[in-house]
Image 1 (cartoon, rainbow, N blue to C red):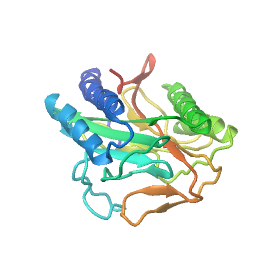
Image 2: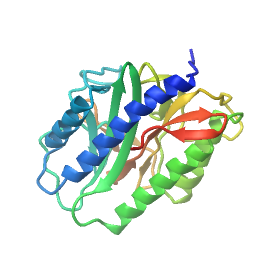
Image 3: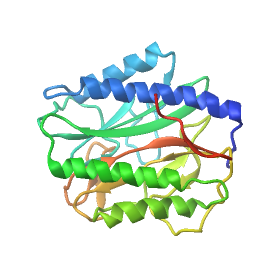
Image 4: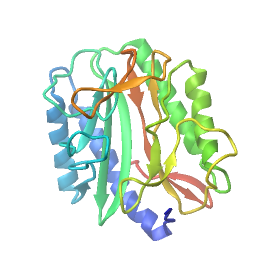
Amino acid sequence: MIELKSAGEIAAMREAGKVVAGVQAAVRERAGIGVTLKQLDEVARTVIEEAGAGASFLGYHPSFGATPYPGVICTSVNGVMLHGLPTAYKLRDGDLISVDCGAYIDGWHADGTVSFTVGHAREEDLKLIKVAEETLAAGIEAALPGGRMGDIGHAMSTVGRGAGYGMQNDFGGHGIGRAMHESPFVPNEARRGRGLRLRPGLVIAIEPSLMAGGGDDYYLADDGWSLCSGDGSRSVHVEHTVAITSDGPVVLTVP
């Protein structure tokens, strides 16, 4: 069942989106050479708690997860594309990291991901991040009332694949609201003009992931959570929670 949100409910999700943006800013400021992923998770926990919010990820246990999720953020480094665990791994000079966070206030969720480099950045990593952000922006711009879900995936794949990067379509975006994951599924790649009709009140998380090697294969790591590029190439993930309104798409996961 797909639930359309009222203006008041979207406003409530906007508050959760501010918390997500606050977590991303705090984690990015704290990240540095020698800092552990677990320390970044602790920073995120503090921001969420001080905001009076809850952590959407903590304890989450989908069918593909080996265990209930142990952290409040996903920290995916280098070849890890999605769902990287916040472990004792110490960040190194030149690492590429994606930080995915979900938070809720008064039962309303928001979900977002930011990617950045640590220390001295590789030019190819900066390009990968830039294209991923452009891919996400194209998807958001296509989230227009009266359009189709396929328009979003088509816009994103045109940018991502056009730059020569790989894209997987098993783990994409999703509806969001009173639950972190709701219907419908939001594909990273799709045919224009196909799929669900986009209506005002639909709120979705749009979240493309790109693999630098150009392939689409990935695998589940031994930790039972981390999804890694099949060829070991660096990967990136970006995401916003977006409300479709009569005036067009509105991004909720910003300060």
